[in-house]
Image 1 (cartoon, one colour):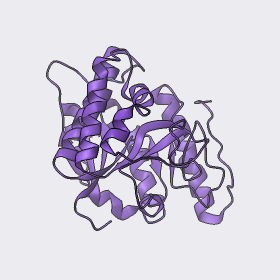
Image 2 (image 1 turned 180 degrees about the vertical axis):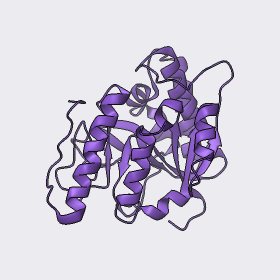
Image 3 (image 1 turned 120 degrees about the vertical axis):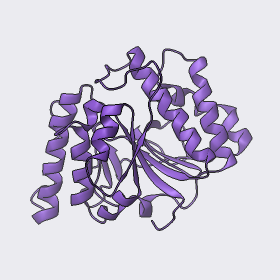
Length: 265
Protein backbone atom coordinates (compact mmCIF):
# COMPACT_ATOMS: atom_id res chain seq x y z
CA UNK A 1 0.00 0.00 0.00
CA UNK A 2 2.45 2.62 -1.22
CA UNK A 3 -0.24 4.77 -2.83
CA UNK A 4 -0.37 8.05 -0.91
CA UNK A 5 -3.90 8.61 -2.20
CA UNK A 6 -5.29 5.65 -0.23
CA UNK A 7 -6.16 5.98 3.45
CA UNK A 8 -7.72 3.75 6.08
CA UNK A 9 -10.40 5.48 8.12
CA UNK A 10 -12.18 4.56 11.32
CA UNK A 11 -14.44 6.58 13.62
CA UNK A 12 -14.49 6.53 17.43
CA UNK A 13 -16.19 8.34 20.25
CA UNK A 14 -15.19 8.55 23.91
CA UNK A 15 -16.87 5.24 24.75
CA UNK A 16 -15.09 3.31 21.98
CA UNK A 17 -11.61 4.81 22.49
CA UNK A 18 -11.56 4.63 26.31
CA UNK A 19 -8.82 2.39 27.77
CA UNK A 20 -9.58 -1.34 27.44
CA UNK A 21 -12.43 -0.65 25.04
CA UNK A 22 -12.98 -1.45 21.38
CA UNK A 23 -10.21 0.70 19.95
CA UNK A 24 -7.48 -1.03 21.94
CA UNK A 25 -8.58 -4.36 20.49
CA UNK A 26 -8.70 -2.85 17.01
CA UNK A 27 -5.08 -1.70 17.30
CA UNK A 28 -3.98 -5.02 18.77
CA UNK A 29 -5.34 -6.87 15.74
CA UNK A 30 -3.07 -4.83 13.44
CA UNK A 31 -0.09 -5.55 15.67
CA UNK A 32 -0.61 -9.32 15.79
CA UNK A 33 -1.93 -9.72 12.25
CA UNK A 34 -0.09 -11.03 9.22
CA UNK A 35 1.51 -8.11 7.33
CA UNK A 36 -0.83 -5.58 8.91
CA UNK A 37 1.45 -3.61 11.23
CA UNK A 38 2.61 -1.13 8.57
CA UNK A 39 -0.99 -0.32 7.66
CA UNK A 40 -1.30 1.70 10.88
CA UNK A 41 0.82 4.35 9.16
CA UNK A 42 -2.09 4.93 6.79
CA UNK A 43 -4.80 4.96 9.47
CA UNK A 44 -6.84 8.10 10.15
CA UNK A 45 -8.79 7.95 13.42
CA UNK A 46 -11.77 10.26 13.17
CA UNK A 47 -12.72 11.38 16.67
CA UNK A 48 -16.36 12.34 17.04
CA UNK A 49 -15.97 14.27 20.31
CA UNK A 50 -13.25 16.29 22.08
CA UNK A 51 -12.40 13.54 24.60
CA UNK A 52 -11.86 10.99 21.85
CA UNK A 53 -9.64 13.42 19.96
CA UNK A 54 -7.58 14.28 23.03
CA UNK A 55 -7.12 10.62 23.90
CA UNK A 56 -6.15 9.81 20.32
CA UNK A 57 -3.53 12.57 20.25
CA UNK A 58 -2.02 11.32 23.52
CA UNK A 59 -1.54 7.74 22.31
CA UNK A 60 1.81 8.51 20.62
CA UNK A 61 1.26 6.09 17.78
CA UNK A 62 1.91 6.11 14.04
CA UNK A 63 -1.71 6.73 13.06
CA UNK A 64 -3.28 10.13 12.51
CA UNK A 65 -6.06 11.79 14.50
CA UNK A 66 -8.78 14.03 13.08
CA UNK A 67 -11.47 15.78 15.12
CA UNK A 68 -14.95 15.75 13.61
CA UNK A 69 -17.48 17.31 15.94
CA UNK A 70 -21.05 18.31 15.19
CA UNK A 71 -22.48 21.46 16.70
CA UNK A 72 -25.24 20.81 19.22
CA UNK A 73 -24.76 17.03 19.27
CA UNK A 74 -22.90 15.03 21.93
CA UNK A 75 -21.40 11.88 20.38
CA UNK A 76 -19.20 11.02 23.38
CA UNK A 77 -21.42 8.45 25.12
CA UNK A 78 -22.26 4.97 24.01
CA UNK A 79 -25.21 5.35 21.66
CA UNK A 80 -28.07 2.90 21.87
CA UNK A 81 -28.71 1.14 18.58
CA UNK A 82 -31.17 3.11 16.40
CA UNK A 83 -31.59 5.99 18.87
CA UNK A 84 -31.73 9.49 17.44
CA UNK A 85 -28.10 10.28 18.25
CA UNK A 86 -26.99 6.92 16.86
CA UNK A 87 -28.63 7.73 13.52
CA UNK A 88 -27.06 11.20 13.45
CA UNK A 89 -23.65 9.66 14.11
CA UNK A 90 -24.02 7.11 11.29
CA UNK A 91 -25.18 9.66 8.74
CA UNK A 92 -22.47 12.14 9.75
CA UNK A 93 -19.99 9.40 8.89
CA UNK A 94 -21.40 9.05 5.36
CA UNK A 95 -21.14 12.80 4.83
CA UNK A 96 -17.52 12.80 5.98
CA UNK A 97 -16.62 9.93 3.63
CA UNK A 98 -18.25 11.84 0.78
CA UNK A 99 -15.94 14.75 1.56
CA UNK A 100 -12.92 12.42 1.52
CA UNK A 101 -13.87 11.24 -1.98
CA UNK A 102 -14.30 14.82 -3.13
CA UNK A 103 -10.69 15.46 -2.08
CA UNK A 104 -9.58 12.66 -4.41
CA UNK A 105 -8.63 10.03 -1.83
CA UNK A 106 -9.41 6.33 -2.13
CA UNK A 107 -10.25 4.83 1.25
CA UNK A 108 -10.94 1.73 3.23
CA UNK A 109 -13.51 2.61 5.85
CA UNK A 110 -13.52 0.19 8.77
CA UNK A 111 -15.56 0.14 11.93
CA UNK A 112 -13.31 -0.11 14.97
CA UNK A 113 -14.96 -3.43 15.87
CA UNK A 114 -13.44 -5.01 12.75
CA UNK A 115 -10.31 -6.97 13.59
CA UNK A 116 -7.62 -6.88 10.88
CA UNK A 117 -5.65 -10.14 10.75
CA UNK A 118 -4.29 -9.98 7.19
CA UNK A 119 -3.57 -7.23 4.70
CA UNK A 120 -6.84 -6.88 2.76
CA UNK A 121 -5.44 -5.21 -0.35
CA UNK A 122 -4.34 -8.43 -2.09
CA UNK A 123 -7.89 -9.76 -1.57
CA UNK A 124 -9.69 -6.80 -3.09
CA UNK A 125 -10.97 -7.27 -6.63
CA UNK A 126 -8.80 -5.60 -9.30
CA UNK A 127 -11.90 -3.89 -10.65
CA UNK A 128 -14.86 -2.29 -8.90
CA UNK A 129 -15.68 1.22 -7.73
CA UNK A 130 -17.02 0.14 -4.33
CA UNK A 131 -16.19 -3.16 -2.62
CA UNK A 132 -18.17 -3.83 0.53
CA UNK A 133 -18.28 -6.54 3.18
CA UNK A 134 -21.47 -8.47 3.88
CA UNK A 135 -23.47 -9.59 6.88
CA UNK A 136 -24.44 -12.54 4.72
CA UNK A 137 -22.86 -13.52 1.42
CA UNK A 138 -24.89 -16.09 -0.48
CA UNK A 139 -24.55 -15.42 -4.16
CA UNK A 140 -21.58 -13.91 -6.03
CA UNK A 141 -19.59 -10.68 -5.98
CA UNK A 142 -21.98 -8.77 -8.25
CA UNK A 143 -25.33 -10.05 -6.96
CA UNK A 144 -27.17 -7.25 -5.18
CA UNK A 145 -29.20 -9.74 -3.16
CA UNK A 146 -26.18 -10.00 -0.85
CA UNK A 147 -26.58 -8.16 2.47
CA UNK A 148 -23.92 -5.42 2.57
CA UNK A 149 -22.41 -4.04 5.77
CA UNK A 150 -21.05 -0.50 5.60
CA UNK A 151 -18.66 -1.24 8.45
CA UNK A 152 -15.97 -2.35 5.99
CA UNK A 153 -15.80 -0.86 2.52
CA UNK A 154 -13.11 -0.07 -0.04
CA UNK A 155 -13.91 2.88 -2.32
CA UNK A 156 -11.94 4.29 -5.22
CA UNK A 157 -12.37 8.03 -5.64
CA UNK A 158 -14.06 9.05 -8.89
CA UNK A 159 -16.96 11.11 -10.11
CA UNK A 160 -19.12 7.97 -9.95
CA UNK A 161 -18.33 7.11 -6.33
CA UNK A 162 -18.64 10.72 -5.16
CA UNK A 163 -22.00 10.96 -6.87
CA UNK A 164 -23.12 7.71 -5.28
CA UNK A 165 -22.08 8.76 -1.77
CA UNK A 166 -24.01 12.00 -2.21
CA UNK A 167 -26.98 9.92 -3.36
CA UNK A 168 -26.58 7.67 -0.32
CA UNK A 169 -26.33 10.58 2.10
CA UNK A 170 -29.40 12.26 0.61
CA UNK A 171 -31.37 9.03 1.08
CA UNK A 172 -31.78 9.89 4.75
CA UNK A 173 -34.42 12.42 3.73
CA UNK A 174 -36.51 9.59 2.30
CA UNK A 175 -35.74 7.10 5.09
CA UNK A 176 -35.47 9.28 8.24
CA UNK A 177 -35.96 6.37 10.64
CA UNK A 178 -33.34 4.12 9.05
CA UNK A 179 -29.59 4.09 9.51
CA UNK A 180 -27.13 4.29 6.65
CA UNK A 181 -26.84 0.53 6.17
CA UNK A 182 -30.60 -0.04 5.93
CA UNK A 183 -30.79 2.79 3.43
CA UNK A 184 -27.95 1.22 1.42
CA UNK A 185 -29.80 -2.07 1.33
CA UNK A 186 -32.69 -0.24 -0.31
CA UNK A 187 -30.78 1.94 -2.76
CA UNK A 188 -28.27 -0.74 -3.87
CA UNK A 189 -30.82 -1.87 -6.49
CA UNK A 190 -31.78 1.64 -7.59
CA UNK A 191 -31.37 2.27 -11.34
CA UNK A 192 -29.17 5.23 -10.38
CA UNK A 193 -26.18 2.88 -9.94
CA UNK A 194 -26.46 1.58 -13.49
CA UNK A 195 -27.17 5.04 -14.86
CA UNK A 196 -23.87 6.41 -13.53
CA UNK A 197 -22.03 3.16 -14.37
CA UNK A 198 -21.09 2.36 -10.77
CA UNK A 199 -19.65 -1.12 -10.18
CA UNK A 200 -20.62 -2.33 -6.70
CA UNK A 201 -18.93 -5.55 -5.61
CA UNK A 202 -19.54 -7.67 -2.52
CA UNK A 203 -16.68 -9.20 -0.53
CA UNK A 204 -16.87 -12.87 0.39
CA UNK A 205 -17.35 -13.68 4.07
CA UNK A 206 -14.86 -16.52 3.69
CA UNK A 207 -12.25 -13.73 3.75
CA UNK A 208 -14.11 -10.77 5.26
CA UNK A 209 -16.28 -12.47 7.87
CA UNK A 210 -18.11 -11.50 11.00
CA UNK A 211 -20.30 -12.78 13.77
CA UNK A 212 -23.23 -12.90 11.33
CA UNK A 213 -21.38 -15.29 9.02
CA UNK A 214 -17.87 -16.20 10.24
CA UNK A 215 -15.18 -17.47 7.93
CA UNK A 216 -14.70 -21.18 8.49
CA UNK A 217 -11.08 -21.25 7.32
CA UNK A 218 -8.42 -19.51 9.42
CA UNK A 219 -6.00 -19.78 6.48
CA UNK A 220 -8.27 -17.39 4.57
CA UNK A 221 -9.38 -14.96 7.29
CA UNK A 222 -8.62 -11.32 6.52
CA UNK A 223 -11.00 -9.51 8.88
CA UNK A 224 -13.47 -10.44 11.60
CA UNK A 225 -16.31 -8.03 12.38
CA UNK A 226 -18.41 -7.93 15.55
CA UNK A 227 -21.58 -7.47 13.51
CA UNK A 228 -24.94 -8.94 14.50
CA UNK A 229 -24.06 -7.82 18.03
CA UNK A 230 -25.68 -5.10 20.10
CA UNK A 231 -24.04 -3.60 23.18
CA UNK A 232 -20.52 -2.30 23.74
CA UNK A 233 -19.69 -4.73 26.56
CA UNK A 234 -20.88 -7.70 24.53
CA UNK A 235 -18.66 -6.64 21.64
CA UNK A 236 -15.63 -6.17 23.90
CA UNK A 237 -16.11 -9.57 25.54
CA UNK A 238 -16.39 -11.46 22.26
CA UNK A 239 -13.67 -9.52 20.46
CA UNK A 240 -11.24 -10.43 23.24
CA UNK A 241 -12.08 -14.04 22.46
CA UNK A 242 -11.51 -13.36 18.75
CA UNK A 243 -8.04 -11.99 19.54
CA UNK A 244 -7.33 -15.09 21.65
CA UNK A 245 -8.52 -17.40 18.88
CA UNK A 246 -6.27 -15.70 16.35
CA UNK A 247 -3.25 -15.90 18.65
CA UNK A 248 -3.88 -19.62 19.14
CA UNK A 249 -4.01 -20.09 15.38
CA UNK A 250 -1.03 -17.85 14.59
CA UNK A 251 1.27 -19.22 17.28
CA UNK A 252 0.93 -22.97 16.75
CA UNK A 253 -2.37 -23.53 14.91
CA UNK A 254 -3.85 -24.93 18.10
CA UNK A 255 -7.13 -23.13 17.26
CA UNK A 256 -8.97 -24.13 14.09
CA UNK A 257 -12.43 -22.68 14.73
CA UNK A 258 -13.87 -19.56 16.35
CA UNK A 259 -15.15 -19.67 19.92
CA UNK A 260 -17.47 -16.76 19.12
CA UNK A 261 -20.07 -15.41 19.04
CA UNK A 262 -20.67 -15.96 22.73
CA UNK A 263 -22.21 -12.93 24.45
CA UNK A 264 -23.15 -11.69 21.00
CA UNK A 265 -24.90 -14.94 20.10
